[in-house]
Image (cartoon, rainbow, N blue to C red; front, side):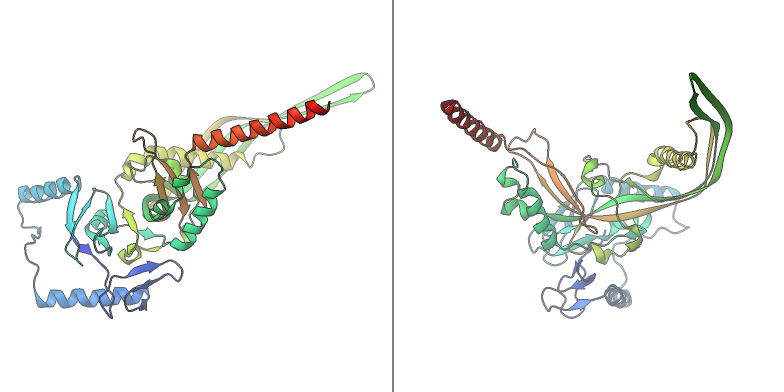
Length: 374
């Protein structure tokens, strides 16, 4: 598997993606490049390397390769992907240990960003990536402002060591676009009551109601990472402006962490179909107006077209775990495009007790003063 650090065309330093201008910056020579410029440079480098020397130690599967050998190679690849993996940093040679779903990270020794390109290739190649638009400085300021407004949060939740843990992560998702033919039939009831003198009249009418049409659902987002057990961690910062997503390039991962999917669409297909049908029915039902009540008798929803895109979405994330390892982890998350925040915060019972005690003491003193004058 290739371990890549995207290099500066001028000095060879490690490039990082800057959300503020959507370009790639070199912290050493201060050069700035567009995505097209970085891609063109790397294509030329790749062509030069291929011309200079053939690949060594690789094995190519062709039509003439025996089926058993193909199966053995595929099995070895599957087993390697399912385990913790060890890589060497291309900049300093230090060992980088990752789990099976990590696709981009940092070298803990030289701090250069690295991309494990093999984990985002072939069938795991994302269709789109939504680049970060919120810089770390802005994300840090909003995190501190948000956390400090919460009275009973432990101070170490937003101290300097916690702030340094704020990390930009690309999470994998399935984005589903679908077109459906829908039909809804039922009975609409109209009830009118009026009084003339002492007599009350009731008019009861029933109507056969039919609604049908074409329904289009765009960008239904489904989580594609099983270890993202805190579903609210990312769903709480939705929606993401997917119209700003671009064709995937690994350069956008430079300077951030990234995860590859480990939930295939087939696993979600029944859930997605049910969700799409529910949205379609609701849209048809919303067109039934002017009746006192409506009783549905039949529903038909047929999915005529569906497109599933594998996308990487940006989230600024910091987690917190108290001294007790058995306690749940708390988190703060921010949409890397819109800045929308969400979180589950810890409670400092010591601070809560002190403030509650202070309030109780103040009330007691006021009560004593009032009682004295009465």
